[in-house]
Image 1: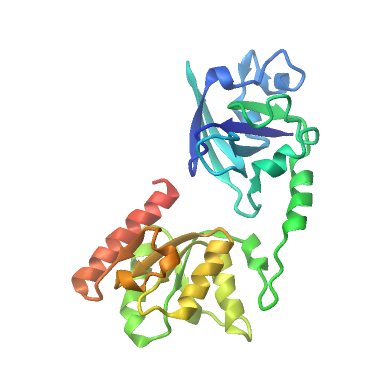
Image 2: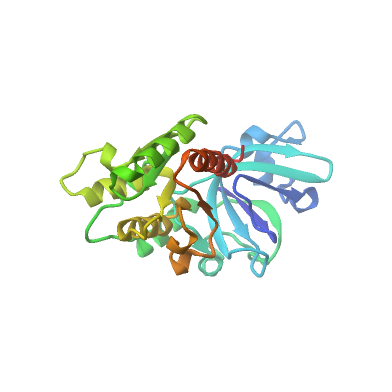
Length: 280
């Protein structure tokens, strides 16, 4: 059993709203009645099941669905406000793939083309697991097993192995720990004989990956690519805008100067970005 949450506008990072008129969990329905106590929707019961967050087919957002877990629900007179945590361990699944299983997912006659919140009496994870196994990525030169043990407080730093970057790393470390994160870079650990596996592990475990593109270091570009490919929050920083690869220049980045004032500004900007990611 799972919550199917479909919205034309898509779903923000940690919460969204729906009109109460689009909440199709009815007390008179065999399934809907399980979520009522004394004639009222019971938030505790709603939180017991996973949710599938879907942008309406043809709607305003990426046509992919994400698995999430509801953390709170506020039922107002006209709107339902829903807070949730997405499960980054499960690959997003496209609307097209979901619509290919209308019976298994109990999509009904509207499919994914109608904004709503309803409960489907279907084993969500069984179908998603089958779909994920078909799409599983198995790299030849490193393992992604650490991706299933993400540390929500970990920030991993990717930067050149050079003494001139030590003050920058110190700044990043102080900035992250000051607001409750932990911080690590590859030369802080030694777990495997191959350094690439250590690097991939700290990327895979991290909630956020900071990549310093200064100097156009090819290793950092490679690491940024891995982080993007496995769905991490990536923050690009650089001393020169010309060091950002052409394919990434459409993304926002933090530019800094490697002096006292510049590193102070870098600290402030990084903390603001991390707070935004956390929804603080």
